[in-house]
Length: 67
Picture: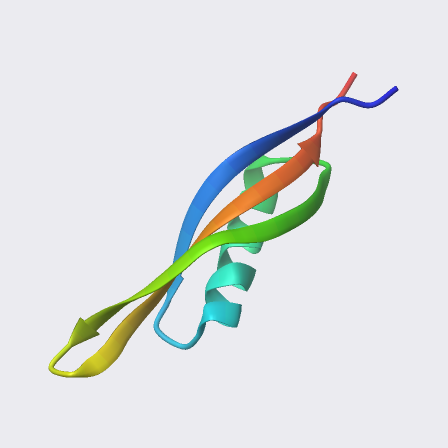
């Protein structure tokens, strides 16, 4: 039997939402072992001078706890 845990990660990118997701998963995988999935719980942008400055995502990362 496996037990999984979900943790929340906030990540950003100056390029795109996709890049923000990739950044978040890559960074989380340096600390969390056994990541099995991630989903975007929220997304938003910051705006400066009428242009998108940064893309931000809130990720829910699922990982399996080790025995």
